[in-house]
Image (cartoon, rainbow, N blue to C red; front, side, top):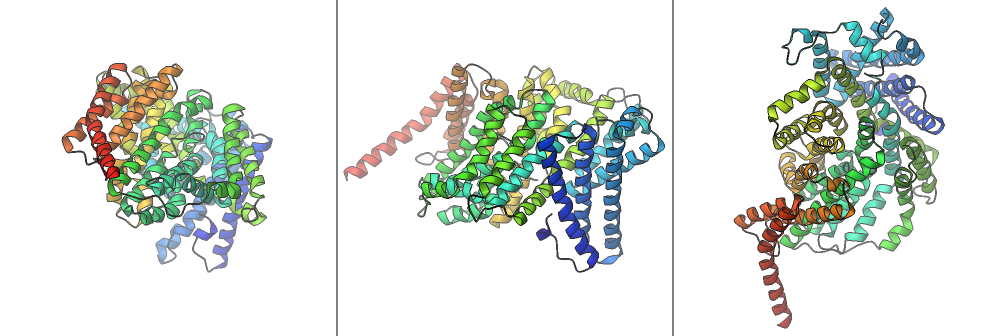
Amino acid sequence: MSNSETPESKNIFDRFLLKAMAWIAIAMSTFHLVTAGIGSLPTTQQRSVHIGFALVLIFLQAYFKESDSGKLGKVNKLFNIIMAVCSLAISVYAFMYWYDMMMRVAFPSKIDLLMGCVAIGCVIYAAKKKLGYALPIMAILFILYALYGNYLPTLIGHRGYTLKRIVGTLYMDTAGIYGQVAGISATYIFLFVLFGAFLESSGAGRFFIDLSTALFGRTKGGSAKAATVASCLFGMVSGSAPANVMAIGPLTIPMMEKAGYEKRFSGAVISVAGTGGQFMPPIMGAAAFIISETLGVPYLDVALAAFIPGVLYYLAIIFIIDIRSNKINIKPLSEVPDVKVVLKNGFYFAFPVLLLVYFLAIARWSPIKSGFWSIIALIAVSMINKETRMTPKKLMKSFELGAMASLDVAIVCSLAGIIIGMLSLTGLGLKFSNLLLALAGGNMVILMLLTMVSALILGMGMTTTSVYIILSVLVSPALVQMGVKPLAAHLFVFYFGILSAITPPVATASYAAASVAGDDPMRLGWVAWKIGLSGYILPFIFIYSPELLMDGSAVAILGATVSSVIGIYALSVAIEGFYKYPVMLPLRALLLAGALLMIVSGIVTDIAGLAIVLIVLVPQYIKYRKEKSNTIAA
């Protein structure tokens, strides 16, 4: 929450806290930028500072959200201040005595136990304030499971662990609150969130929209296509579905409505396109780095594997737009900016993004080094234009926005450390995977469906990062045991965690789009789900067709991609029920079958699918060409 988002307070103490929040946020961004440039602190110190900043800011935010009226409101406000002070204390203690704690992790002192219990309480309560009840309740259940697992049946039980052992694992060891996932947030992720904040405050979002409009505005359905491409360009860097919708939607939804699309379809397009930003390299909603660290594979391998499915996802949206435009006869935009003028006025905004891709993919720099120099490059190029120039005030505001935008991920990663720590201590992860395998009965399709449902349910209302972290421990091992390659298994889980943002009933991206479009969230959500239907099929496809993950020869990869593109187009026609003319329901069902056969890689399935698609579409095409020739002749 920035100052502008906080109601103006009347008393001196509240005004002081508002300024303190701003300066703490600026200090947080400065700390991460400096440590990225000169080198990170020792593991626990770096992570304790990061989590400490996040906890204090979350509790100060919560203070201003509490009601000023009534005794309960005043008690809650005071409690949030106490929790902020406690958060500072546990972080300073971990920073100062990290080495001693590491040495006595098996035999914690009384002060260690006290600080550890307070730390666990602060993280769980902060997560409740920031994210709601789902994840905190899950964390509490895992702690209780570690304490009392010896009372459970043998299938899921264990010998039970003492409070000392649990606190030592979660606070004093690098396997809990300050674990590996928190470390990724404290290094890689924060820098890219800060990079996104600089892009937003510098006006790059406007440049992406203008460029997309200039490139696609003159085509049929150009307004919706421009909005989709702009969401992709902005989302591939920012990586948060609701944030993408709120950044691009207010500018593009009115543009689509003006072109002739109904507001529900306009909002649905933005929600689906904004969600897809997390599929697209280079950042993939920050999860690319977590996947890389979890699997111990190079970041570039993850980014390359995600590239073709990401492109196919956006192609599916473009196909739907194109078919809908023909169906309701949407004209190209009447006023389209000149691409040369747009590039002349803002080409420099593309430089930091291209530089980031170069650093990560070609120079093979570390994400920390790449993120740091990309931010420096963005600040430098912003100086070219007087309107985008980073003045000291604008620079401080970007620092503040970046820190505030990082809080969700920071607290999720810290809370996930509690869950992962308990899974590791008790061995539940392996037991859960074995349970899934037993339920699936050795059937891969059933196992994938169970995994999909788990990801979509857990993802409702939660951040994609948190869903991925949990499912990567609980569910991905089951897929791997069934013979799925580890990267494919983790991307499968990751994709469905993302798609929860457009899956009713709790579709956060659709809700955000509905607030901009002024439409019913549930109805808009179902339209978005329909538009994004191809996205629900893609994860199943790349399990069976690893060529889509760049796993195979160049010829095989090209063949699988072309086949998938044709299949996705046929699926889009089936969804919309229109090609050159309306497609009747039985033919739509036949087209759906052909589309699924085309998407599944294989010579036999490709030939069969293509034959079905041609049988349905060719007669319409021939009829259309004849009518067009007759019209010209007349």
